[in-house]
Amino acid sequence: MIKTMAAEVVILLVEDNPGDVLLTKEALAEGKVANSVQWVKDGDEAIAFLTRQGNYADAPQPDVILLDLNLPRKSGHEVLAFVKSHQHLKRIPVVILTSSKAESDILLSYDNYANCYVTKPVDLDKFMSIVHAIDYFWLKVVRLPSEEYDV
Image 1: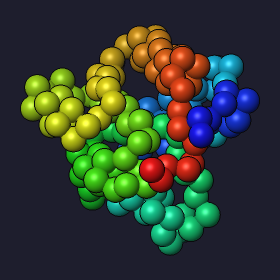
Image 2: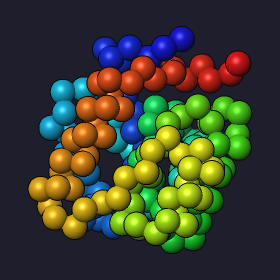
Image 3: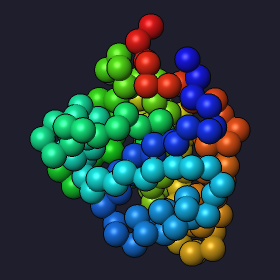
Image 4: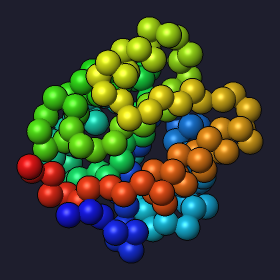
C-alpha cells in the first residue's frame, strides 16, 4: 500500500541542535503537505521512538527520517545501521542532514543504505532552501510506503 498525499506525513527529526530543530520545523511548516514533525535529540531516543519503547510507546511510525550524524549517546551512523537492519524499519527513507562534509561519513552513510546525504549549509537562507528542497522531493514527489512494511 502506498501512502497518499492526503494522509499526514510523519517526519522523525533526529537532531541535537535546538537551533537546527527550530529552523527545520519552520521550513517544513511552510510546505503545503500536511505533516507531523516528531523530534528526538539523540540516537538512543531515536531507537526508542522507532521501537516504541518507554515514553515512545504510542509513537507513530515515521514516513521519513531526517537524521543528523553527530549525536550524543548513539551516533547517527548507529541509528542508520539499526534502521536499515530491521525488517519493519528498513523501507523508511533516511535523509542524512548533517554538518559533516567528511568523505568517510558520506561513504559510511551510503554503505549503510542512507537514501541521501545532505550537508547543512551555515547560511540561514541556504539552510532553509535545503530543507524546502528535502520537503519538496520527499513529501511531494516521492511515493512513500504506508505503515504496512511487511513483505
